[in-house]
Image 1 (spheres, one colour):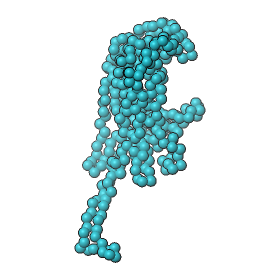
Image 2 (cartoon, rainbow, N blue to C red; image 1 turned 45 degrees about the vertical axis):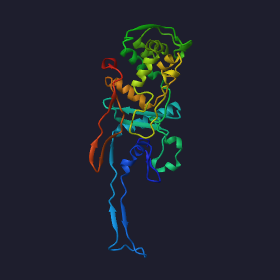
Image 3 (cartoon, rainbow, N blue to C red; image 1 turned 60 degrees about the vertical axis):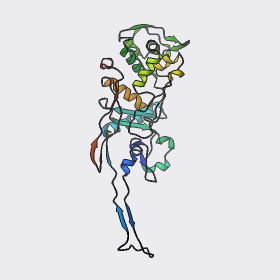
Image 4 (cartoon, rainbow, N blue to C red; image 1 turned 135 degrees about the horizontal axis):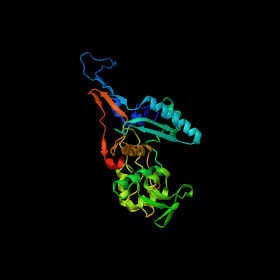
Length: 304
C-alpha cells in the first residue's frame, strides 16, 4: 500500500508512486466543444472542435514480488514479537539503488482509505525519521578510515565510557572492553569507541562525511512525502555532539537514507539515488530509468 499510494475521490494520486507520478499517470482529458440550438441540439453546420484524450503512462516498478511478500511477512512477525507500534523494512540493490522491497507498518487498505487511520498512511521507511543509534558507527569509522586517521587495527583503551565536551558517554550496559581495535568497535558496538573515532575526526569532518553519505537531505526517491532527516548546522553543535552523533544520537534519519548509505559501502563507495520506477511507457514511447550516482562519499579502498 505504501509503495503504490492511492487515488482520491477527485481522481488525484496521493502518497507513494501515485502521488509522485500523478500527472504522468493521469494523462490529459479529452475535450469536445460543439454549437447547439435553443433546444440543445447539435447544429450540423455549427462550430465543432475536438481534442482527443492522451492516455496516462504505464509504469513498471523495481519491486520484486517475492522479496516484497517476504518483507511484509517478516515485518509483521517482528512487530508481534517485539510488541512494536510501528516498523519498516527497506531492501535496495546496492549496485544501482533500485528498491526491491519496501514494507511499512501500520498499513492500510487502499480500497478503504476513508476508513483508515490517517497515521497509517505515513510510509515510515520514507517519511518518518528516528535517531539511527549504533548503525551510524560504520559511517563514522568509514569517515576516519577514509581520512587515514585510523586503521582497522588501531587500538584504544576502553574503560566503559568516554569523556568529551565535559560529558561522560557510557557503553551500553556499562560494559568495559579493555584494549579494543577499531574493528572490534563494530563487533562490540562500543559507544566509547565511536567517541574515540569521532573525536579524531572532529565536528567539521564528521558532519561533512555524514552529509556526503546523504544524511540531512532527501535522497530524491521517486515516492511522495519523503522527509529530509535532521543534521544540524555546525554552528548549533556542542562539543559533546561529536561524541553522540558518532554513535547516532542527536541526529535523525529515515530508514531509506540509512539503507542508501550502507549500500554505498556495499558497492565500493558510490551513493546512488534510490528509485522504484524501473520503466515507463507513454505516448512518446518506452523509457527505462537510468540509475543516478549522486557522489562517492568514500574511496573503494575505504568501502572494502
